[in-house]
Length: 79
Image (cartoon, rainbow, N blue to C red; front, side, top):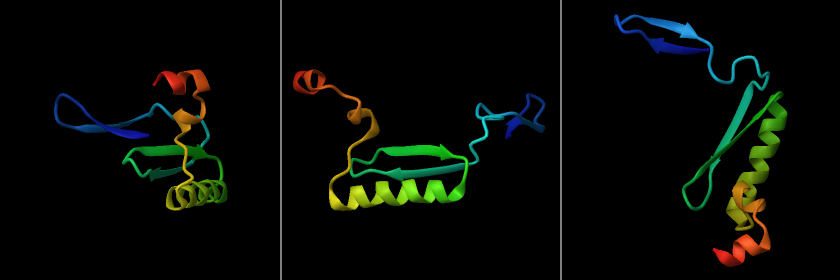
């Protein structure tokens, strides 16, 4: 749920875009270039595990941004 301010100045709770999806835990990190990445999980331990992996990759210098992981060799050569 999210809080929305109405035209008359009052607020009310309305369903957010993620309402009813069932992924309660959201983990996010900032990579070395300053971009924020996030992912949602059903269980807290899964979110922590993913976050520890991503943070470790950023610290060790082996991090690959999710959008770059889907890039083909041709796309990479053209860029």
